[in-house]
Image (cartoon, rainbow, N blue to C red; front, side, top):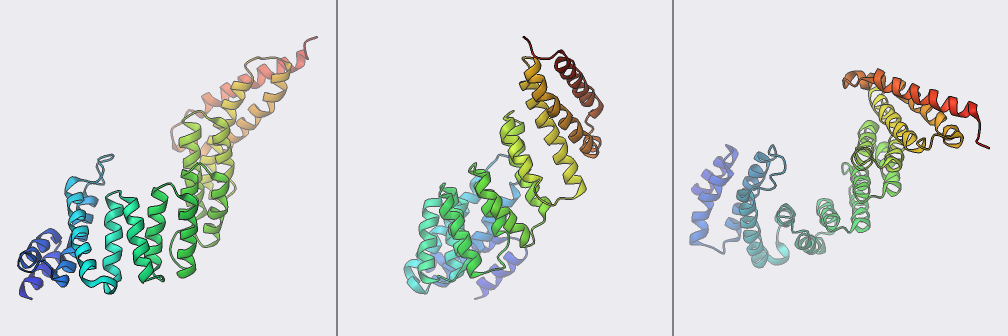
Length: 312
């Protein structure tokens, strides 16, 4: 008990790995003591999370080896607890087991552990949410989305359900399916600017940056369907204009009466959108005047071609 008290104080002082060490001495003497195993796993989760959080600033580094080792220690301890306690294993221990498998990227085992836990505790919303994460990571998107709906049925105030469902569908390239969930998220109190920027981010990454202009346009129009503030609207308007502008340049290349008739209204639309996006351009140090001059040049070219009329 003295040793456990010291371990507790160490963990509270920010040294969960030190606390593990104190408990480990007890486990060396009594390796099948379920209480000690639970303490060990609890401090292990805290230690692994701390190691993982410390590495988040190193972009692309992934989960550090030290954190991985700690999560494996947690899994080993908790599997022993389950073997000892069986169906009486505590909910928090079962949740920690699933979390550890997810942290290590083992979504298949995480799913199995979550399903076993839910067989004992079917009303645990957090474990249902963990199951949804495990399913999503395996690419089982529809099942994952449906599982989050189950979470909300159990706990209506569970945060960000619609946002997560929509985001998962967007990541799977299913924007049309995602929009109803995003709209549901807004009706449930999510900031529409957050939702719009999430949709826009997909349009930017998979549309604008890849010069896939139809994809970009679809995403930008979806983002603009939300009631956003002036700053977000200006940013969306600018990139909407940018997308229309590049579509127009591609379409006008034959430079004949037909293409001019088609693209002149598009260039004019792009110009209006750039004007609406001026606040964003100014904030981002974009030389908007140079862009507007280029658009005006295209409009002049199309005007001349239209005046010439179709070729006989």
